[in-house]
Image 1 (cartoon, rainbow, N blue to C red):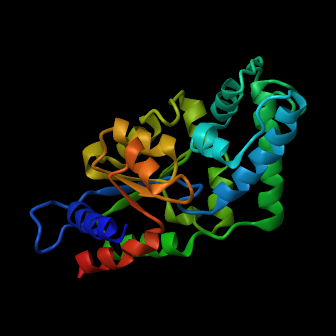
Image 2 (tube, one colour):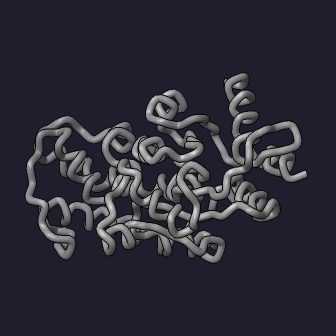
Length: 265
């Protein structure tokens, strides 16, 4: 892994940030996923999904819910799509329902709303701290200058999460589940939300970097033909992220701070 990371770091630095020894121009934007990239809220989401599906699946005498189910069927997708994907994996067919369904409703939307109620309660009671390495990476981009940033998240809780983490004022462009629903934009693994964010920044996809920790997210970056797809391994697995479309994978964005600072020097 060390040799692969060393090679990847060099590619990342030359491609994204340029420098005196490279023929590559720097790219113009970094598009961040939220949960699992900027904040550890993916862990809160994982617990909320488990609290939803463990009893639900047990009642139906199908294969029990596992941590791997989160990565295989849910992670990075819009909430209701994640519910539908998990149910399909167990051969369970429920009516889709309506986004206004009560959390107690046995519909796709009802289950999604039930999960969101758990997530919101945990967020309000415990708050959230951003990953220090991600903040350091964002700070390095800011110091460097000339690189636009945006958040692209499937979550409809993106703004409250960013506010709780003290990062809301760092991003002028936030394309989240609310924006996608309002504008009818397809969610990940389709590239549409990332492409929309890049268009708001006035940057072509070929000049933007997608930063993702989820299978569906790196697939979106690859499908959108972005200049670089940077994977962050928070549990999905380095090899799996590479296979799904990441160009390089790191365990923490803090690993790249020296590269950003070095390119800026």
